[in-house]
Picture 1 (cartoon, helix red, strand yellow):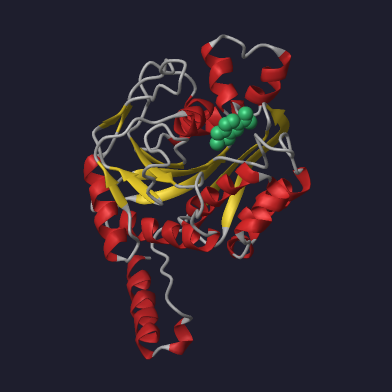
Picture 2 (cartoon, rainbow, N blue to C red):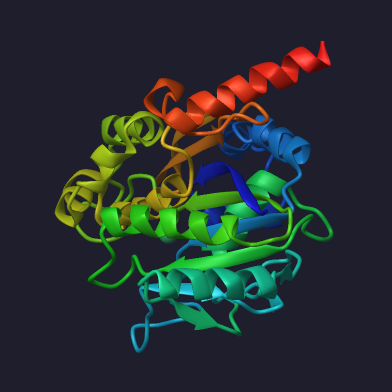
Length: 312
Ligand code: DHB
Ligand code: FE
């Protein structure tokens, strides 16, 4: 069975990609940002996922105001980097996982989430920057990627609650895929930022930190935040943060926060990053109710006692 073992949250600031592509990573301003991802790259290298599901948003590169799906799942065999106006980023073409992606599409659509199936798509900084932050700058990406593009650029974006529930549906889909695959899911974008208008440059660290705290401890509280609160507190582009709730919904209710990084600013944005792991369940432990409540369970327990006596 395929399994989501961990979630990664990461900002996607385009200037981070430009700093990488133009050899500026050692400049003090950028070193502060990149140094926060050193441990994460190590974690990823140790974790070695078989597939990454990357929840991200397209910034009018693949879609536009003419047509923008709320949730679009990349089912193609590959996803080239998009030209965002200054040429394609020099990052490898992403390989997809069409079989698992098609399985997820089928499962979540039959679960009443109306996904758009995308069989051809170029991906912009929303996806390539978090890939660099977690995987570095390899010649080839070490695992296939399933992109899930979410509309957070044109009103109305999906609610945080719907995102969270979609995460749960994705988890169910993954767990009904027969192949043993270790999967890491990314939630990307944010944190607080506004890139135009009178409040351009807005950053709200208090809001961001509370969001990260609750993401680990009480994500259901976050699902009740209305769009206007994101706009008011985290800036017009802060709404990107709802994508982190898809990642969180795909994890266990209780998770271990194994890493967090937060720095201000990078470009106009507060950079936030978190790694959440599902707790490893002891082998053979089941989630059944307490044994005393069921005669069958009592019988099973007795049988187990007998069996283990026999082994002594
Ligand atoms: C910036 C941040 C974004 O998330 C984005 O998509 C574009 C620009 C910025 O901080 O400059
Ligand atoms: Fe963005």
